[in-house]
Amino acid sequence: MHLAYPAVLSALLFCTGLYGVLARRNAILVLMSVELMLNAVNLNLVAFDVWLSKAAEETLHSGQALTLFTITIAAAEIGIGLAIVLAVYRGRGTSDIDKLRDTAESHDPDGPDRDASTAMQAEKAEATA
Image (tube, rainbow, N blue to C red; front, side, top):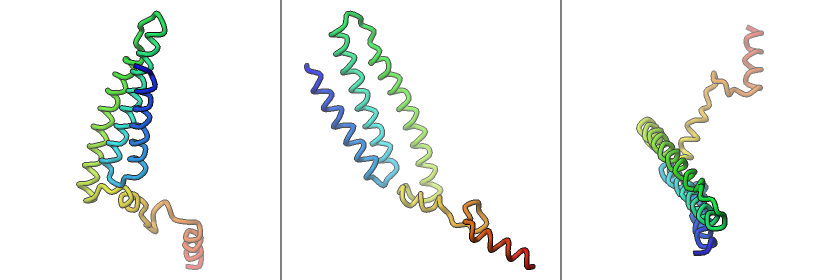
């Protein structure tokens, strides 16, 4: 088998995952798209490992070892990510990324994100009182 076939399949999988990350609003679908991108990388690692082992005399299989590490890290990432998404869904009632971003940017006047003009007005009011 030529190296081009798994490389093209890997590129298509990665582009599909990238589109999913950029276009989706649901946090679970974004996590699934990240997993798709990681699987594309794994496919590339194994394909190039097999290709290089045919070209060289050594059979170290470092690409397959890196793939096992990537699968392990991806499993841990999806477990923690899913736990965070479920906790946020229970607390806020939605897993829409845009709505979660809006709730994170609260406009509390006493909060640390108070702009300079509001701070100066508060200092003037305290000075005149």
